[in-house]
Image (tube, rainbow, N blue to C red; front, side, top):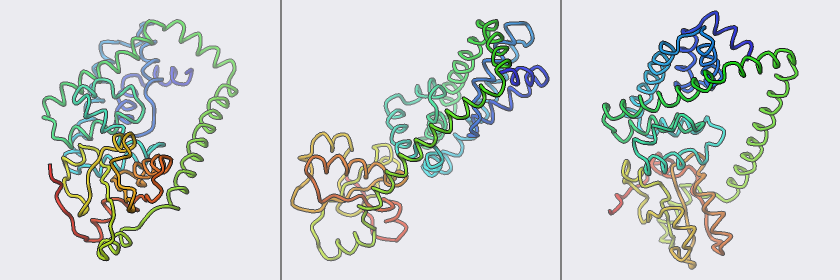
Length: 312
């Protein structure tokens, strides 16, 4: 915090605008220390709150409009790319789509408070063709709520923040070492858990070529499309013979699947994560002949294999 105070005092509004823009553009540089500090400076008369807040809103909305435009032009490729670079890519897409379906434009009001959610919710608004005026209205309100919350917190507790900054300065490198160590341990835990998940997944997958051979041979299969309803609306094509079932409904009512044939699950999320997790749950319920499709729907499509259109 002492370094943040010093830098903000020297570069002020320019640093605030650039930092906020970079975070909203997807660069992993959290803005809340800058916003808290800017609020604290405003509380002690060294920064103008009425200038800093509109500047932060302008930076936020500018970056969000860029992601909104990418969502409109690039579609779900943008969301999947963002989820691949997150620490929990395997649940990123489905979690965000479910929230966006439930809340719609209102999700833009609070998405900035949830790490990782904002980066995906903004392009989703473009993907599903939310009118630009409506997007700007809710995004503006969300940006104002987010920025005001942190800056007001710094403003009202400016004296406490400066006291904490002085104490942190006295402790020096020990504080930084503790923070960095905690971050490293957390990232290592996430990485280890993810590696184990991917190892278990590789053992049980079926390739698209193998699935095509089984279909050509007339083998009786139960093929299940696990994509979210929003994905289906945007892309109604499915693998021939597949049925679309919501994963939650499938895991709660195992009677939806036949026990007399092999079950193939597919989705479009990174690493077939949804398929793998559903398969693990269903195996625990006694359905043993069940396999996720390697590469999901995209791998099937890339091979040029036939597609069908889902019946509504």
